[in-house]
Structure formats: C-alpha cells, structure tokens
Image (spheres, rainbow, N blue to C red):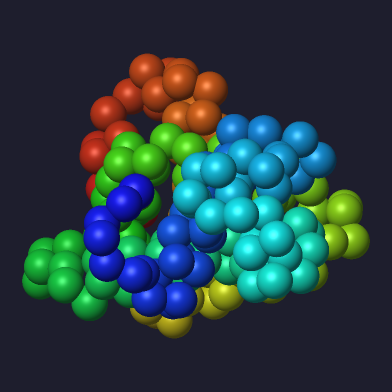
Length: 179
C-alpha cells in the first residue's frame, strides 16, 4: 500500500490490528503467524513486536479492537433506532449486519471464546464478553433473562454464520425482530 504519504502511527496501528483480526480469524491463536500479520499490514515483524511486545499481546489488542467495533455497532443501533423498535431488536439487526459485512469477525469471536483457557487470551476474552453483555443490558434496559436470550440468539447466529448454515435459522432479520 504505497500512497506517497507517510501514514500516521495510529492509522498504522489500526491497520496492523485489522490484519491481526483477519489472520487470527482464519487460523486461531496457535496457528496465526506474526509474519503473515506483518505482511498483510505491510510492516516488518520487528515493528509488530516494537508496538505490541508479543504475539499474545498483539492478539489481545486485536480482540479488544474487534470488541470495540462491535460495541460501537450496538451503541449506534440502540441510539438511532426508531420509536417502534426495541433496543434489543435494533442491536440484533445491527449484529446480523456486522456478521454479514465481515464473516471473518465470526471466526475471530469463536477463536477467542475457544481459546479462553489459554492464559494469554482468557482475561481479554472474559473481560470483552462481559463488556458486551453489560452494554446490551445498559442500552436495552432488558432483564437478565432477556439479555441471556439475546446473547444465546447471537451465539447461535454466530455459529450458523461461521458454518455457512444460516438457512437452518431462517430469515435473520425476522429472527432479530424476536429480540
């Protein structure tokens, strides 16, 4: 990616995090190569390590970045919903859009939850999942049971999408209306 103009450090960091999300989503924690991340981002491996320290810290930062994007999606959906749309429904529709826009985000989430027993991932996996849970509760005002149902539906959609089996669920937008 040659633009003739020097990229700002923060923009380069985001580019690296996006590359890490892509590679992590494809391969998971153990098989993700920092060499592949660096190549995808157009930077050197030493630069990755200078910014993030270790591969585990880079993947944790990528998980954080991914979660921040998802949380922003939920917040925007809840705040911009119409008067006849519940916050849960708006967030459900937004989640479906989030997943449809980037199927790799499904795999990124699944790898994170599957790797939660790895000490390098456990804390960030637990914390970011809790943050999502808390946001949904706060933004919707839903009961604990309603938040659990929302998260269960979201998990099912994530798995069906990752497996390319969405036809088992039916029309995802109709499903979102059930939230």
